[in-house]
Length: 289
Ligand SMILES: NC(=O)c1ccc[n+]([C@@H]2O[C@H](COP(=O)([O-])OP(=O)(O)OC[C@H]3O[C@@H](n4cnc5c(N)ncnc54)[C@H](OP(=O)(O)O)[C@@H]3O)[C@@H](O)[C@H]2O)c1
Image (cartoon, rainbow, N blue to C red; front, side, top):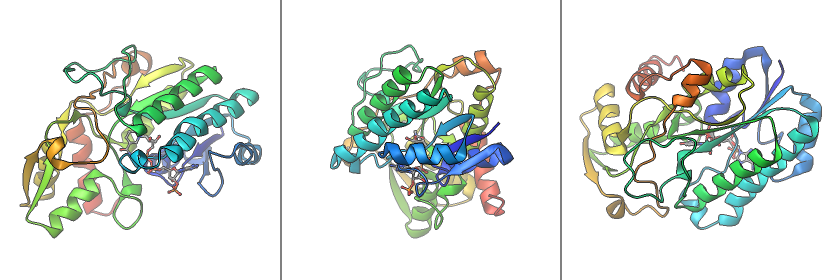
């Protein structure tokens, strides 16, 4: 099966292309500009895919507060453009979304199911939620996959735009201590595992909305502490509240996703966040990734 992977040089796109092997038709930002419908049409004319996976997005959560037009143009209208082209050609579409569609419920302590009402608290979250709705309403054969806190080999320092793990390792080398928020609980996820789950979903025709993350949950402070422990760093991690940290965009205090629907449909459950992190760090240290 020919699978067009949009955002092929990103973290998820890279691992998905690797997982798909010869089936992947990698489409980079040079090949496809989501805000331009003609560019999507041209790229899909050339690729002639039987399936499309969109991993591309405007992911700059804080900067989106200052440039909402750009975030909406890519994440909402870009998703609409792509869904329209896929629907016209009757090609199924996998579109990737985020746990940042939640956050409004400040008292939440129970993992969110796909049937729970979303409620974003940032421009990025609203833009991604709008993109979900466009895909779900315009392209009948779709998977919308919500995930969280991605890290993968394309985020390695010096290669891509980075990720939380790479940022911590860099800061850990530069400073004796780092401040990390301890009041946001979620499930950071390895793109290598998410890519696997997406391929499993594509082998079914159980279209719809899915939550896909590694198992378990953690605050960013706890996650950073584990990164340094596994990497053998002595860096001190100081827990801070989000309001002390002062990021521009609000984030959900709790956005753990219930992935039971994925397991029920595919029989597949992602491993724990700790096992995924441990493998990422050990493969990274031996330069296998
Ligand atoms: N990263 C996370 O922590 C996280 C968490 C939850 C959900 N997600 C979602 O998961 C998906 C994959 O994330 P990721 O971390 O793999 O992303 P990523 O590494 O930032 O890669 C995104 C790719 O999309 C491309 N792109 C950006 N704007 C585009 C546009 N207008 N048209 C076409 N291509 C464009 C980028 O190209 P350039 O580099 O040239 O801009 C980049 O190659 C996204 O939908 C994201 O919203 C991510």
